[in-house]
Image 1: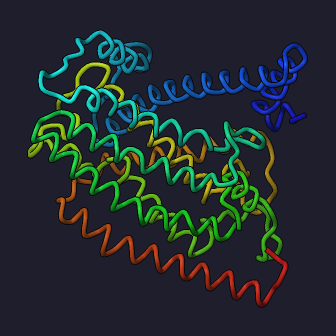
Image 2: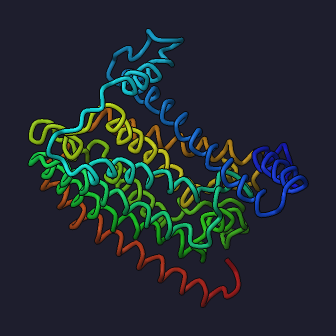
Amino acid sequence: MSDPLSNPVGAIAQLLDGLLRSALPGWLASMLMAVIGAGVLAGVVSGAVILLVWMERKIIARMQDRSGPNRVGPFGLLQTVADAIKLLSKEDIVPARVDKVLWALSPIIVLAAALMAWAVIPWSPGVAPSNLNVGVLFVSAMGSMPVIGVIMAGWGSNNKYALLGGMRSAAQLVSYEIPGILAALVPVMLAGTMSMTGVVLAQELPTRLGGIHNWWFVFTPWGFLAFIIFLIAGIAETNRTPFDLIEAESELAAGFHTEYSGMRFALFFLAEYANVFAVSAIGATLFLGGWAGPIPFVPSVGPGILFFLGKTMFLVFVFMWIRSTLPRLRYDQLMNFAWKRLLPAGLIVVGITACWITLSNMLLPGVR
């Protein structure tokens, strides 16, 4: 049984699972736990997106010497709720000549990929919707799925501007996915596992550096470089400034979602912010120790979920900070940076990590 003080979420989950199994057959209890977990996850995603939109508006307003939302609800907290109600009440316009199947499925696929990435994120010890032993591989696969939805949106809209925006978007996502995966390989190699939970546990254990606990991978030189590459690739894959060439209002209207309105457009919007949180959570897990304590020289103390959320929200703040300060790149600069800068840097960091692990195993065999 998990300790309610150090792992309250895990304790509640185990208590609920025990109650269901005492009253229902095992297979039905497992099914109900999966349904409850999916419902809780969907609710958390929706609530997180509402909070992140409000946060971004307030943070950017502060950095640009503006007020931001301050009329609807205390501190403008209900402004995003009002916007969601507005989008839900808008007419769902379907252009006459679209490919209705591709056009309708596109926002669902993009959002589903974002939600699936949340499924393997370890929030605290013993609390992960699905603790896969190939969690990093699963996250990488889910990161590739939005490309399919983006191309479907551009092609299915039967609009030349949407098609051009979809092609540009697909090229950008594929280009930055490669260095992002290379960067994610560094913590996998250091931990010796592709399990997200295993990567966190590896960062909690004492290291060769004097037996230090919680020596997160970002504190190693190669881990820090990999973290920077991962962060830049994550910003590009979530279509954030300075890499938000997907929209390019001056050239391509709204890009691949030009023909979408109402709630269908809101699904793309929801997927973007869900991806921002997911990328931040994955970065916190792989490089910042996940639920491990905030001080790298002492073992973890207290509820791990608070440490995890603190690190994740810090990275979310970095995303918003960058958006409020940097201008867009040109498209040629965007692609050149991916293939001529980030990709070689990712390969070099992976090579350095492999050499360091090999030398360490030769000099200190059997010691992490």
